[in-house]
Length: 309
Image 1: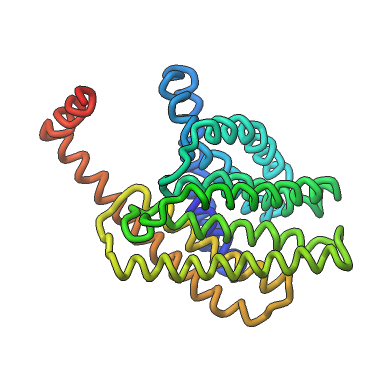
Image 2 (image 1 turned 180 degrees about the horizontal axis):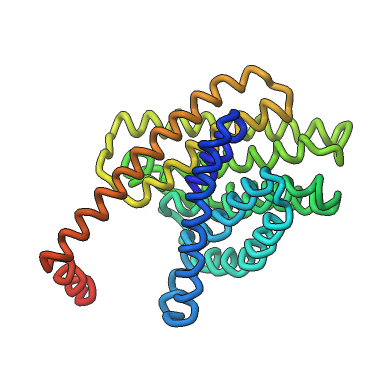
């Protein structure tokens, strides 16, 4: 998700070589994770079912949709359509499983993945709509509306203390609005809606962008106020909203005719790229330390303790 959205941002700003390099990396990661997903279904179904009931399971839908969107921008509409079918096929089952196990209050930032996954489908459908036909734009509109409703529900369950204590996934609170903005920009750019309906979509999209920017500011202040420099795998959930907010600004700048959004959005994109690189370095270092522990026997002891607990 994080790598693909930065790739999209680089494409929108003209850095095509870098964008394609990131796309290749995202594609390899998707294939590896898809294989791991399939193997778990075949060989470890009880644990897979347990994980499928949690919001992070919806990253499968979101990541597939974002990757499909970048591939669609290459003109590979057939491949992108196949990814849309795959994502749409698993989305309702994972979404219902997650909603059935929601808590009433105090949930971390991953709760907003119900919105992100839904809006990811809306973005991909909206991207393919001009090629596939008007019907797909109506599908994108329905997903867009549902995604906003899911965001409101998730917001009521979110633990706002995560702004100061969250390990990284709390940024999805803003990222969900950013991807909603991108979905809205696809609808605004379409010729399906004119007159008052186009005005409503444009206004809604601009409001969503303003809210996403407000979340960005609040979350950034929270990071400064309570620094959390240690690496955590959930920091990838920070990169995605950073990149998505930048792409949202770039998309609205083009589709809604708000030219002044282009420059600050480019700045936000490079901030996202810098954080992407920092998190990648943290991941590599973490894997190196884990390998050292495994070689010294520490990893085996940790696994034994985890199984005992």
